[in-house]
Amino acid sequence: MAGERHFDFVVIGGGSAGYAAARVAREARDNVAIIDGAEHLGGLCILRGCMPSKTLIYSAEVLHLAQRGREFGLVIPEARADMAAMQRRKREVIEDFGSYRRGQLEADHFTLIRERARFVDERTVVLEPSGDRITADHFMISTGSVVNVPDVPGLAETPHWTSDDVLDLDFLPESVIVLGGGIVACELAQFLRRAGSRVIQIQRSGRILRNASEDAAAVVTQAFRDEGIELHTGTAIRGIRREGDQVVVTYDCDGKACEARATHLLNALGRRPALDGLGLEAAGVKTGESGMITVNEHQRTSNPAVYAGGDVTGPHEIVHLAVMQGELAARHATGRPAEPIDYDHLTGVTFTDPQVASAGITPADAEKRGIRIKSATYPFDDHGRSILMGATYGYVKAWADVSTGKLLGAECVGKDAGELIHGMAIAITLGATARDLLRVQWYHPTLSEIWSYPLEDLAGE
Image (tube, rainbow, N blue to C red):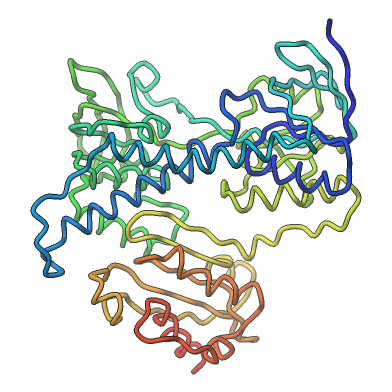
């Protein structure tokens, strides 16, 4: 017989945002529940996103370096991918993270409910399949995202892979057509190419990585083509079909009809919020044109009793922001000081090689706000450490407010850009100027030292 229980705070979805919200809510409230009916606990980042993809991408990077051995005076007779062995290593790495997160979710100070939730009114969810009813003072929706299958002619009818499938590959595909030019598409296209597959990447817009700068995208495009990825941008797909043991994609490119054939097809055309079956309308929770839940600066939805965070809200599908959003929502819901997230300090990384990383606002954002800026750039192909590493793709760039001298943003495209960007991210958040940063001892020869060159230009202004 169905029952009813009441909690102070209920999280729906136990990923990065959800666990962070539950943990912070538990600091102030005794009765906190986590509802997660997924087959495996842990959330997208650990199970099917950041950690498995970066584990495999790093293996491919090691392979790529080994294959370049002669450039470094090394004789390496053979270097090739053992996909099954790479999968075993990935599973071992992910299990370590996954088991730790499961332990956190299953801890005694939470009530973990392994069912699915559906809102039936503004403060009540029904659990499926038990039929139990759960009420709460506040809810937090953090159910993540799922692969999107857009309305591309023939895509839904043609067998294809998603990122989940590629991350579980235990064999090397002969050839793969990759649809899309976003972060996931680019990271996995390069992974497959370095593993040894022929890769044809088809992107609708005029360039890949549309959320990065045009200069950054150009560097990655050149690197991809140098590595043998057959990259086509500015296309319009006309049809997708299966023909024998091949997938055929027909598309318009450069004003003419083109055709691509491969043994496999990867749909990397983005993700959408995982909101199906949640009963948002019954809860009075509104979504925007993008399909994401609309929230205010404290992650509160149109229903004051319901908060949301992570991939279901955006504006960026990034794990550290999901954590911050979950923590913010829980503090606000439990009546504690809750300072809104400052997206002007946003840090982002794309794990292609070269990597693309950024921090702060863009020059275009500054212009829209009427802020006059000065920017300076320095290339990796003129930097000692990157030259000796054979890592000469890319550049670093920083820009500052002319009136105050404070750094507003930075971009790094190159070797280990995801690590290098944090020096600038700290400076931007703390309101440092180029002159402040030049007081730092930039050790020679390091990759980090490259920042001192554009900083000297900015300080000179």
